Image 1 (cartoon, protein in one colour):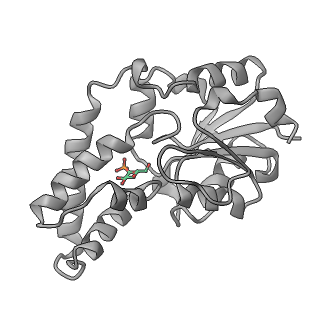
Image 2 (cartoon, rainbow, N blue to C red):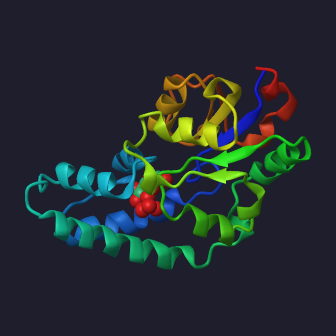
Image 3 (cartoon, rainbow, N blue to C red):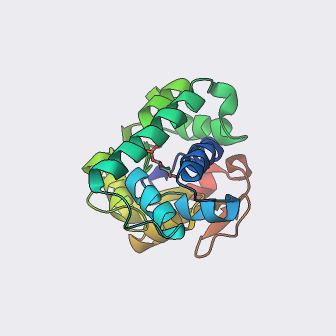
Length: 216
Ligand code: XGP
């Protein structure tokens, strides 16, 4: 029996992945690196500095910048990304998410957010669902990023359940791997790429019934 839900943000609650792509693509272009949507799949679920590192490796420029310069580049990307977020409204919730969340809340299922994004609280406020969650893991307090399961273990702890008692929702392969590595039940939200190892795959969350998930 499951007792709580743990959600990734980008690609599960809202489609901010496309805004991250715009901001990373522009930053990469400034460095003479061209990234496309296929490469962008590798940045999903990956934190800010790790995302930058992957772009630099992809462009063969991983040795060209000091840590301080990389921090400045990451800040620049984030400034652009936050500008793109200004117009976010509840209309930007992914189809089916709010219906599913409302149903979970009605049944008093504790819900947590496990996102690598430091912008998660700001985004949840823009989407007007910040108060619906019982916990939001602060990625700045983690020692390892996804696919390590740390963020999912911390999310389960924060809602006072074990990972085995939780269902995790993810759109990124790294996230599914993290969920499975700590014994959670994994729901893969598939858009373009297939997700391996997911226990269940859906296109939108309202394809699922809260009751049947709790019985997994
Ligand atoms: P933050 C973001 C990364 O910049 C982005 O590349 C990832 O796809 C995203 O996290 C995953 O949720 O982190 O810059 O919003 O803190």
